[in-house]
Length: 320
Ligand code: ADP
Ligand code: F6P
Image (cartoon, rainbow, N blue to C red; front, side, top):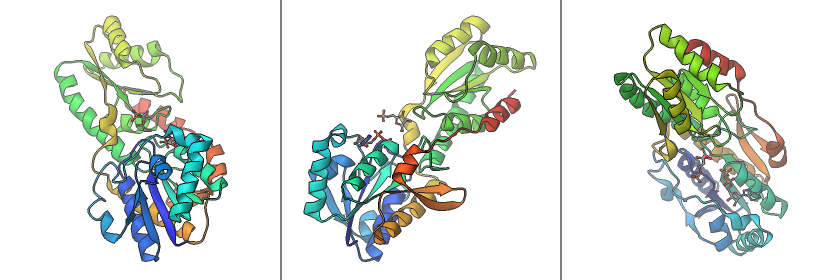
């Protein structure tokens, strides 16, 4: 392929810039023309793109967000929207597109591939909820941010002998909550994948640890469960422990990416270009343990991923 495009789509994630940089640098080094498409599929539908060169991606590996901007683009899901994007690809001469985003973005990439524009997806989302991937770009940075924020909360929670009920992101998945919850030493972690009983898993657990001398508590709740304000009220009513709710929100999506996100983004960006160079599209780049692999997008979208229940049990065993 002589001309390829790269876009970032859906919720941004720290490390997307590292992936963009790798796509641009390895594409240019292979003699390709690389077009940076702005604001996800919107840029593809309306031709908002520019030719990038080796220097277009200088000084971005350390930056959160995405220099290409991101968007959710409902119009692209319509047949007319899709057709606009295909026409733009033909006009500009785009022979392949690297789509960095979550599984919604991959559905778009699959549809484009089906209509003759080969696409390769790179998993970029803090949620780590893409079935074919052990790991998605942004997850590590986000968990570290949660850990730092909850460490701060712990200071004030401890000073006041309080309970902090903290909501973390993850859409319908509990990966951030589970892993950051362990790192924060949460008394209880509530995630959508595992059934819980509020009385048994929160109230009784707090009372039991209280008897061993514990006077402050951190409860981590995945956004897929939600309701942290009501939970804090209930805890205060039933236990008498003063409680506060905190929703960490979009702070979890920002910040300078960690080593893991920079390295993973770089490796995945190079892999995506390698595939397109060989004329291979309709693939998702993924991690499998230490390896960078790739899957057919249809296959990838039909895979399922399960949270590690053993890890969940262990988290509760050691947080008492
Ligand atoms: P993510 O990629 O993070 O999962 P979204 O689900 O918001 O985020 O998807 C990002 C964009 O991908 C959407 O705004 C839309 O343009 C495109 N998209 C999502 N789902 C589909 C679909 N089923 N078919 C085609 N395009 C889709
Ligand atoms: O997918 C990333 C994510 O941050 C989710 O954790 C969260 O549910 C969602 O995006 C928030 O989306 P928005 O930025 O549109 O509020």
